[in-house]
Figure 1 (cartoon, rainbow, N blue to C red):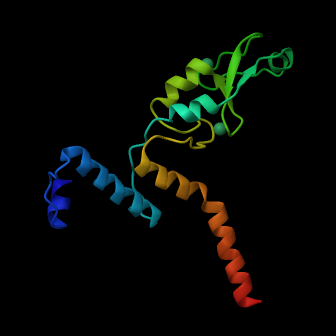
Figure 2: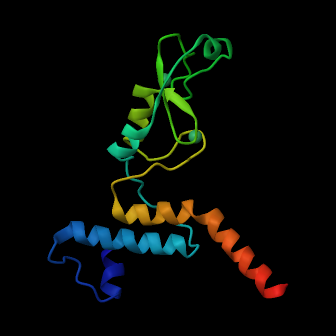
Figure 3: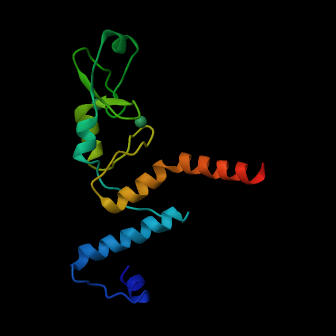
Length: 147
Ligand SMILES: [Zn+2]
Ligand SMILES: [Zn+2]
């Protein structure tokens, strides 16, 4: 990584130290991914705000009848338990999903990405989330050009 910065003419340690350098490197990763380069980027944990926003669902008899399970620990849901509901509608035991969301920001089942506190990563998350709209805008543009 330091070689890469040296090549670009950057001094490896800026005024703000290694944190600043790390942030710059991550910004480059985000730009690379946005430009279609396949690259791994460290994913931050979900923000406290995103977690607080997720509603709780009281397990009902119907859930039990329908054999609802927590996808993390695979234990069947029991009456009086509460499951956290992610924006993608997948439900988990609160303690199971909170543990998971400390490591990464996405739903274990469908990879829906929750908000994070990392401004650099947020740029990439919002860019990815906007993908269907972006495609639609491109289609509309094509339609208006060729019809
Ligand atoms: Zn669980
Ligand atoms: Zn999901």
